Length: 510
Image (cartoon, rainbow, N blue to C red; front, side, top):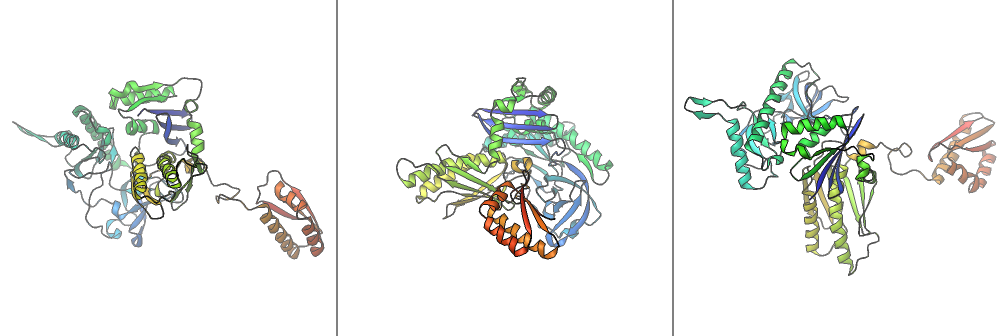
């Protein structure tokens, strides 16, 4: 698989595109005035404790108070040897959660980290289980454990990595007695997927780097005022290199000299073997245009996704969940209906997986495949979906297909979707996705005229409305206007306003 990372930088916005085999798979956007908060560490102050929700609101200096659940509060430092398949963020088994009122109280200062950005009307989600990532590792300051990412499946490699980490973090006995390790034994680590095949030297460098970062964080903790930021996550270009640059990435192309210099310095420090893959793009044509990324972004903001077979998907994101509806469209197939449906669903499974990643859709997702009779066809479609999701960096969980052909799944999301980052609710329809017909608006205007005449004195009325509405009134409803004038005893004039939305109108008394 050929993979490239494109970094496009303008003065107020940075975008990163991940292209696999010439097809855009991911887009990440960061704006100077609206940087994300995930990974940042703050000295927060508890503003409200809610026993009924087992949670508290914490002020960390953001626009809205952030949310901290009792399950996300450190109570003890459980030990572990990492024999289980931990996630990259180090999910650790914990004893039963006590009441939130026993863990925090109003006015208390508490060190917290953002794990989910503010999304829609919800504030940021917090945890006190701090974690600081590097190229190969995630530092867990309050967990005495060493774990290995579940995505490293080779057991021999898991054992090798774990043994190296134990050597690097546990004091080694010598003739003169135990020698202290480079890091406090109280610190825990998760070995990331990027570490597969990494040398002992590379892991040792990460351990040393994280040790330095943690000492700075500890010093900031002691000095910080309430609601102050203690640690800030890397900017998007460096974060993309840390998390996305792997052996199978052929090129990283950057279109800004300043950012290119920063990425070169970063890679020489943390992944020198891959530094030669970074290139400065200086072509006249914008880099996202050259790779067709701009067009793909525009297509990712539309509901309909065409399939090569002639079928299509309808992607609908709502507050509660995202639904993906599969349709055969113009695809008639070559054999029979079942075979046509099966082929369409196979293609739709691949396309749906890509759209989830491209649009950064998360939470609960329902995919409505076209009904299939053959049980083996259903299994193959589900297998195709799972296989297509394997390259997704976000954690996904797929459940069995229901009798109605529905597949329920979840996808972890820590930031807003692409659409909600780039768009806002339509002012004409107020986010409904539809507008009232000209006919509906016409009858609303007639009712408003009747209401106005009864309430106020006027010799005549002027109605301002959209061109389409006025045209309809003067053509199809001219008889109704005459009846209304006779009923009210007033002269009514209509004037088209070029800039009025279809639902917008004003009734003016003269």
